Image (tube, rainbow, N blue to C red):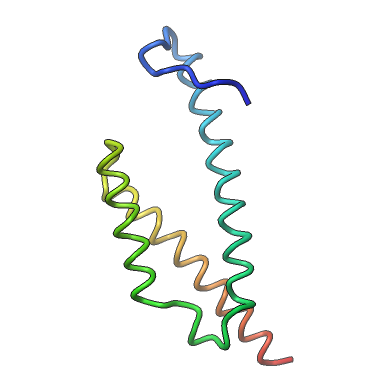
Length: 103
C-alpha cells in the first residue's frame, strides 16, 4: 500500500479519490481482522444468550464515540457504523451458537 498523502497536499480529485480508495482498502482489511475475532468469540461462549452482552456493546460504542470526537469525526457517524457492525456480529454469533447447540 502506498504512503498516505495529506488531504491538503491533494491537488486534484484523482489524488483525493486515490487516497479514499487506499483508506477504503485499509478499512476492509481491518474489518476482516475484526471479524476473525468475532468468529473466535462465539466459540468461547456457552450459548446463544451469551452472543450479545449489553454492557460490552455500550463500552465499545462509548470508546469509538470518544475516539471519533478526538479525531474530528462525527460521533454519531461512528456510533451508527459500530451499532451495525456489532449487530452483525451478535447475529452471526447467535446463529453459530444455535447451530452448535443443535449438534
